[in-house]
Image (cartoon, rainbow, N blue to C red; front, side, top):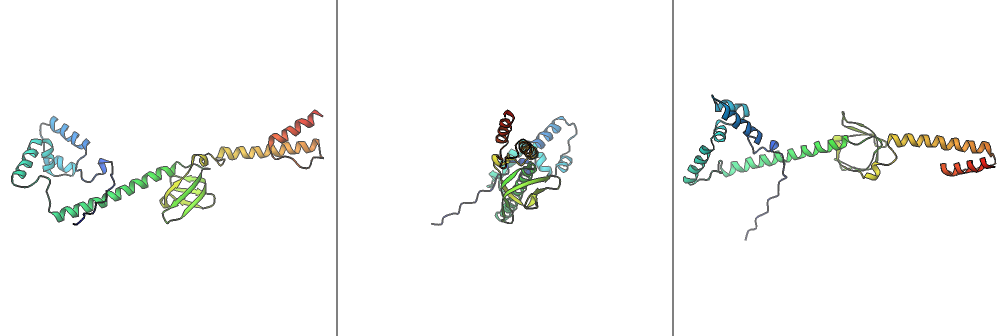
Length: 228
């Protein structure tokens, strides 16, 4: 017994405007019907040309009764209203549509990742960068993001073009790591205050050679010296 191979499920586009099987969108149909009902001089051919479809498509749209009668006539003749082309022609059309669908899905993925990459701010650390050439970059520090040029400036890996990125991973913890401009500025001020506190202590008590590294511990030493 011959076992039929299960057809690989095609990705769902989920966007009627990109679905090549539909000649007219829902909005187009509503606009045509509204114009038809309000018009005193209707021209099927003119409307068809403006939407890039055939005269028959417009005729069937504004006259669903005609479409129903023609489908019934086809059935009465032994045919089926869904059969418009030969088997071979249908295969060609289907293959063309599937290729177009895959292309659309790839473009949508590319568009989505570009939007995500644009949200990466200076100072963020990317856990893993998966590039299209198979390279994986770990712990990438972002120092700039040129959204208009679609380029990420990194600390140790140079410029990374959006188009070279396949995917990336970033955790909320690393996103908040002390590499943001505000945190960097605070660290600089902290080091200045720490050094200043150390110099003050040594001025008061030169015998102290080793100082603790934390600001609070140095502050405690200074307070104890002031009490003497």
